[in-house]
Length: 313
Length: 276
Image (tube, rainbow over all chains, first blue to last red; front, side, top):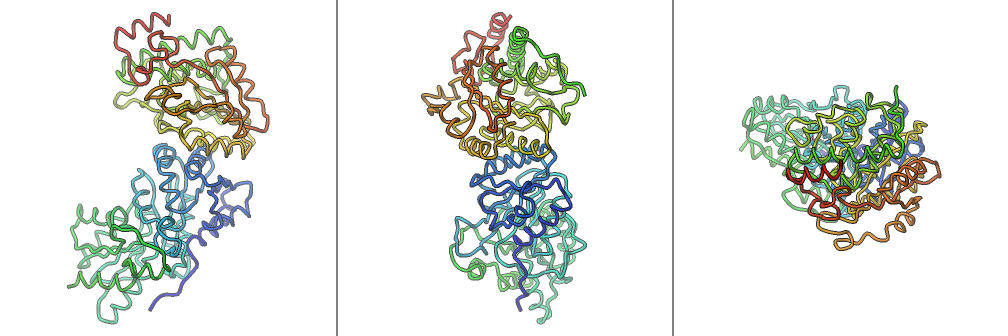
């Protein structure tokens, strides 16, 4: 049984920004001509003097954000995940990560659930790229409530932060902003003892659905919302490795370099475990509806169930 | 806060520029690697900025009222280190740690390692965007501080420079001042030969900038242009400074071998003699 859909996480970002902008006068927002899609338009309307549209120029977007940060502003720079991370990566490396500037990168249109626009607009590698930047905090919130908390935490954290949001409406995981949200701390959204699913972003919903389906068949599945990929909650991963028979990592990202790799590294070092990966397998997707793509590329509830079954087999 | 001063006269600055060039030669000899050509071409501009034009306090590098400086062509950072030591940011002896393990004087500028370095650069094309962000932030706070950015002429082959140029004119950041070190060479050869960047003045004008076209080794012109650039005209300003790569050392001048080659002991001695 699929869970009810909430608003898209990009929409939750736009809403959160307006609220946070009120509390933090130093917050400024930059966009590269996609403010109607990344939802920074709400902030632009509320605080026109604190919003900069740099036009279609992502390298400059990141550079200008770095410069603003050096003057004590808290810049949020947004664009589509693929454009900002690919065209702005060198600028992120030197101007943000190396200089340790207090810049917040919040991207929209992460993953393949964006649907019909196709591969050039999809980002399947952004989390890996973000993780490769030293000291960058990397978050992939699951639903609107989790996104609100991620943005709030990003403002309060001193240093570079990356947050990935999505285009499509996201399945609701929480009824309200999770009070126990903290950077680097997994949220156990379902207790279980046979297998653990560690998921983030759009896969937390399907993971919970899978856990519910399997419960009817007597399989007890723990689900962790691993909203922070870096720094990873190693304790929660090790606990899962010790207490359950194996781990399924589920993410809307290429199988290499994202949450799966991070979890595998921790288990390999601290408590070797059986792991299955629900992710995009070394390929690009195509144009179709988001739902069709999530099914075709192995990112839906049946894929999570099959992975859990493989561990129990 | 004590602002650095008193400002040097043109003839004092000429002497200072020579001393900074000597420091660069010594540093690069000691480091056994680095880029003399681009440091020597920018020496007069950097001397004028640090010893006269910029408002800064070497004892308090994060002074709120300071002007900002970015060496966007990061490989020319030795001339900046020399000016910083000369104005008292750190002891002169530290210059000889350039490029060595545990030194704050990285091969290309690192903002987190050395107070007074405002931006980490060295991947060409990025400094003007960072300077634009600074200029916007300062303007929001009602500050009258200026942001100075030195660009290389090879560097303006990078597309990001023109993204920033377009945006700076659009945002009317009159507190942003770029200085183009027009030494006509890049690593692989002359800019005419590798990638023709002409017409330089017309390009910046077309992008909406106020352009001041000067001889970058005439201290009188350098000082005059930098002071004029501080006037608020509703537009960003670029100073196109015609320079000579390797300026001041006869055998390095216009010999692109010295873009990225440190002097030998003999070359150092000859260079220091010429610069004395």
